[in-house]
Length: 447
Image 1: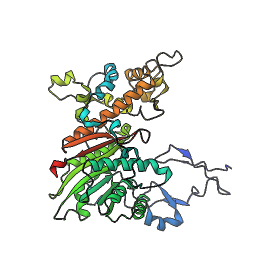
Image 2: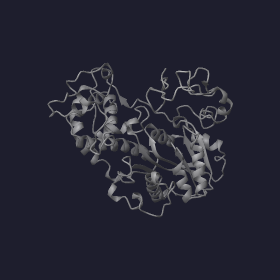
Image 3: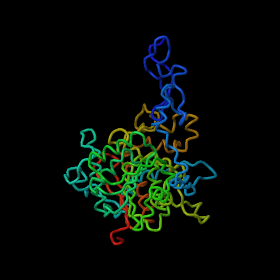
Image 4: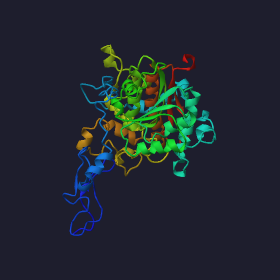
């Protein structure tokens, strides 16, 4: 009889793995996997609960309020995008990124919109966390880097004129809500709306942080997927839309992952109550490798940024669009400056990272392809061969350029709805390699 439970279980963050807990005497499983002891949760059958604790669990189940259906702030897929701006060839094979584009990508992005980017050399002391003007939110050593990022973000938000007690702040992908708490530490009576897909645990953390720092402003927390979030409905349900004075809304977020930033930016296209308007956006972006081709807001700008007019589309008098394979490959390249060392080692296949000069290396062009690769729009033979010819330093440079490409597309989208938009290196890469803050506003002249 095994001494450890061997029941195979899965979770969102781990692949299938054995339980590993000690077995109960007389059983070949742990106490949680004895048949009849654990039953599916009546609210969310995707997880289980002890049969004798069902009543208590239902009162605090994390999935209890997970469904926002029926609330005024729920509108299905209101912030979803369309894939009509991505070109998929009907004939032939889409090999994706060309050798010339792979070679020119760093120089293309280096010369793109110099007025729209603030170089890291211009970041002030406060952005490096050396200023004492911004009190730490966590004030514990293991959270020090988060305090540095929060103080740096607050300085940039204040410099853009977006730190005002009359504004309402909508924090997307809020987690524990540290950014909202940091704002309330500066503006004690500010109203903050926090949106995330999770509430349990985080709600208590947010309240604890706010009480710890004496914040008295309203903190409204809503559990909903950003793609379904209706701002006007939220203002109505929270009794904020009826205010005769109206209000101005600032969308904020710290490390909003992947498509979450695009969902947040598409909120700028929503209709607000007549006495409300958008004041600006301040979102620190991350996880470009998790972008969605359908939801990314800057698809129509990519061919222009990359100087890629398509002859076939020009004949049909259609605007240029990026091919699906090229889009996916550029997305994958954005992780080259993050994963592994600072020289851009990344989690590519051994064939993809092998150099041509290595006689023992199996190059991507000659390596046998698996059935999965044959159906993968990313791992085309030409792309793998291009990857194999790059040194780690060259991959790192192209990873930086790919990230700037995605951020620049978002910046240009913001300029359609707000008068000013910048991408700012708000802190040093030693604090976080995802150190670009998308900051947009209507400008001081509109105040």
